[in-house]
Length: 284
Image (cartoon, rainbow, N blue to C red; front, side, top):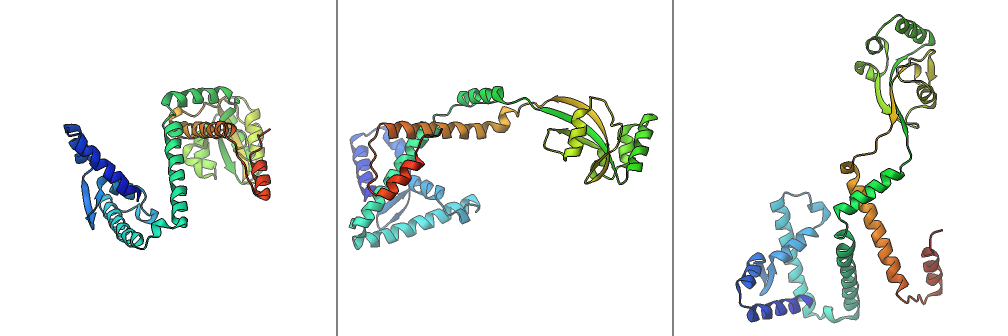
């Protein structure tokens, strides 16, 4: 129904504007196929391909496009039969079309005023603000040697006191899988290690080796703190997509709020009205 009107308008425009530009637009959107005289254009096929069944989305490009064309032709064939039975004139169909039009208009407006409105400068500004507001978190970089008994751990501490290299001793004595790295655990923050280990490591100074073994559920540890620092923020490249999503969420919520504030909304059903009011109460 709407497609016929659009095609008629396009044909009229083509007749009225005879120019190279008009022919260029036709060339950019050629007819791919016809079904009983109804054109299927490249734009139609592109749209069908973008809405293809998720199960077919992993197909190679050529097969996916062919599947989209096949489904589009099938849809046109059945649509002709449906129109022949005047199914497009029923109230139920018209209500569904109106619903779909509203949804697609919502999506188009969202894309224009929310998705496309977020610039790289917006992302950078929000990133800078988030980084500035982040609480400072201390990180420790440590090595450890894990053994089964307290006596073994004490022997390790004694060997270190006699000048044995920590990394070499870890490779020789530790039972932890990271022994090949000299027991290096990298940087970690509070909450990332078991409590006993974490408490000991954060209480030590840079370059210090634990003076007594630390017992955890994994065994007995000897710890060396290699470095302490304030955790660096994640680089922009790593979080820019997440930040863009946050900005879009905020823009959309503000768009909905201003639209509701300017509109008169009445929910006639009492139960739904109460639920809608509760769901839309301003956050404290």
